Image 1: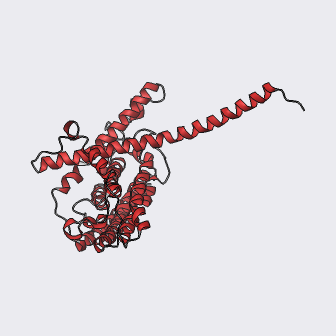
Image 2: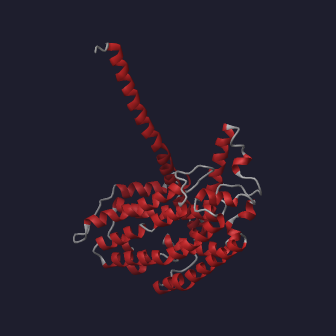
Image 3: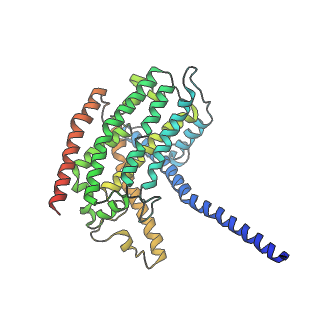
Length: 365
């Protein structure tokens, strides 16, 4: 069988084209992930700048003003400084646990962003178990903190790691029960379905009004999960130097810093999605896709998605004022007070809230 040169060249060009298409396909799959990571990075820089400016206003002093216009690049300058600092390792510590701990804390929080809908069908992974996937992934972060505390071979670090684990377990259960109540109200555990269930009645249809007790418990539990004042016992400066971060320097210390703000942003985004109507405008019977005529007009679709993202971010950053102002308002709790609040108050109240929600849903059938 004789095959001429033209046929061979055609086969070769076809195989090259096929391999190029596969490469383009892989690159196209990575575009949404990189876009999300870039957006999260900008969001973190904005939060750090906002916190410093609001803190300065509360304390009647001048905040960051030299790094960039209005000091917006101060967080970037701090990150660059940490990047070039020397990485020190404790001489008798476990270097593997010491190195892995910060990475686990950051990666577990980053994965939570994959199920957050920033706009109408603008979500990386719309899963049926979206909210519970977030809870499952976020419970991995304290393991990283415990590894960091144990691997540091320092009593302050180890105590900080143990406190982080105890605090996370105590407040994760009320948080999960509040999320379960929301899932029962929306008849779904998908974050997109939960937002769409709130869109029918506009401002009055927000879960904030249907679940006020759940919202307060969720707020307190999320503050404890983010280790924000008055729940920052794992890194209490007066007691534990810096808790599980005591032995860290350089980029590893920077990763813990980033992880705390990532956790704060993801908690605020979930408050927006679960209780504040997500991307929808607060007009009864009008949702973002209907308002901007998604199906007919491509320009309307792009504009509607952009408006949805903006509405989500505005709600998120307005809510962020609560944890930022709480930091300079309330004193730190003792460890026994923190555990008593979680187990003796929030857990029974969240269980009662779940029972009431279940009863109301059964009677409405």
